Length: 232
Ligand code: CA
Image 1 (cartoon, rainbow, N blue to C red):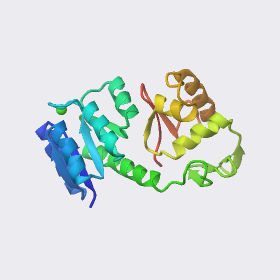
Image 2 (cartoon, rainbow, N blue to C red; image 1 turned 45 degrees about the horizontal axis):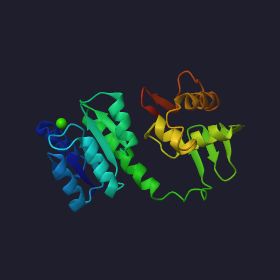
Image 3 (cartoon, rainbow, N blue to C red; image 1 turned 90 degrees about the vertical axis):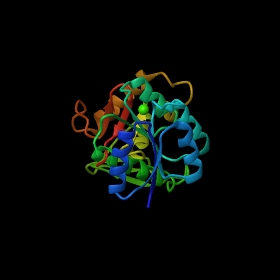
Image 4 (tube, rainbow, N blue to C red; image 1 turned 135 degrees about the vertical axis):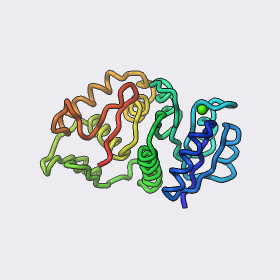
């Protein structure tokens, strides 16, 4: 049974999440403040953490940093603060996803499943540079050994940057990737703020992979945050 740690000071939301999670077959550990959350994380090693940003003792963002010093466990931010800047900061600090209150039990379960699946996949992927996998996604097929891409069995030609961008998303289905994360991964340190270059490569990639680049079906825009490859 997978174990989920819920760090949330609002008792009603705690109850709502615990009920939904237990119904879905998860074991639930509840923490009503940041300090207890961190010690539960250390003692009980949960498989996933749901973390509220507005906690009474320690700021949720600091809880996130503390957890990340010790563990790669998937973390989903659960926050009432519907502000892009905080979402982006949390994602950049290593959170895997975020949910803005209020949300449904269905939404909660969907995000948890993506995060758990992604974590397992990351731990079974070959080392960087050694990945000759063939990825299939919708109409697309990517042969990472040959560096070739097909759309509906027809080869499409991507520039090296477009290729790396597509590959990064294919390896992270369902996960929101912030501008900064994408820039750091593909362009390297120092490009962290240059979203213009990313937008232009994204536009040209979409023109090649999407049926209608104005209404992308594969890589969706998360306004003010980044992009997410839709889970098919
Ligand atoms: Ca709170």
